[in-house]
Image (cartoon, rainbow, N blue to C red):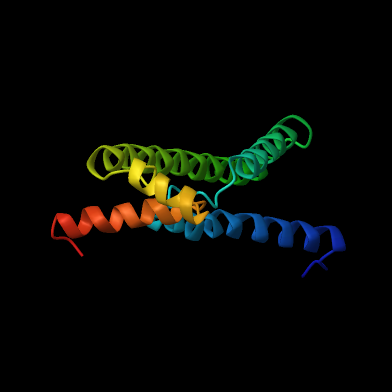
Length: 147
């Protein structure tokens, strides 16, 4: 005999399916961080930390309130993914900062006295640090024979 699916059963099924699939949805974000060359500046620590804490609170709810260990496992996996994203972002930013320090030593800054004097005369300034960093990265690559 086939039991009819109740609305509660259907909601639980959709909830479980979506939250299980979400674990795999973090992968593109992780790949994007891995390929990023600008220190993963588009990634918000606050947002991902809030997602992680939210998932962790759901783990606690699943364990202590509804005694659902499958639900707890799914949200623990979501929490872990958020922590991986935060860790990858921190690593990318640290590598990017270290690279910039090397570039500062290898390539003259845009604040070189001659450039600064020219800026004062023409009234122009270099306001986009990202463009400045990109220019230095290109210059170091050209000097070292890389493309």
